[in-house]
Amino acid sequence: DTEVRLMLLAALAGEHLLLLGPPGTAKSELARRLSEVCDGRFFERLLTRFSVPEELFGPLSMSGLENDKYVRQTDGYLPTADVAFVDEIFKANSAILNALLTLLNERLFDNGTE
Image 1: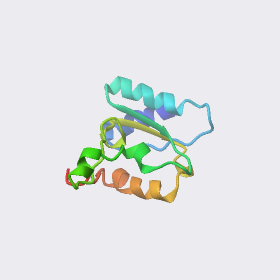
Image 2: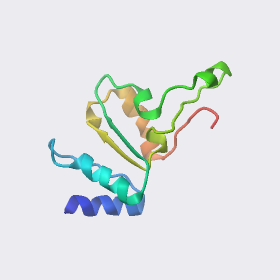
Image 3: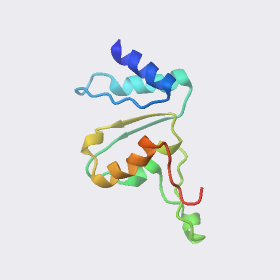
Image 4: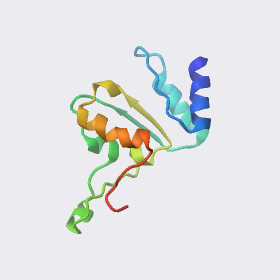
């Protein structure tokens, strides 16, 4: 009950929510349900120490590279999500954690010239 209230409060306030708990306590299900209620785009990913930025932010655009632009195809990935569930975030490597800093703190994603 407390978790549901916190999730709704975070959604209404436009803030992030960090849920910590043992496996099987419905953390991911709460995020999925919130996405359905809000009719928002949902993104979910399980991180490991081998995770790469492409898993979160999308692959590089090959046509962009051909035109000397470094941009990612972000549609369907974390930068375009309304509700995101990033599982095992503390197991991610430092490259992933550093890349998440600006997105989480400032809500900005630098996608080349876009």
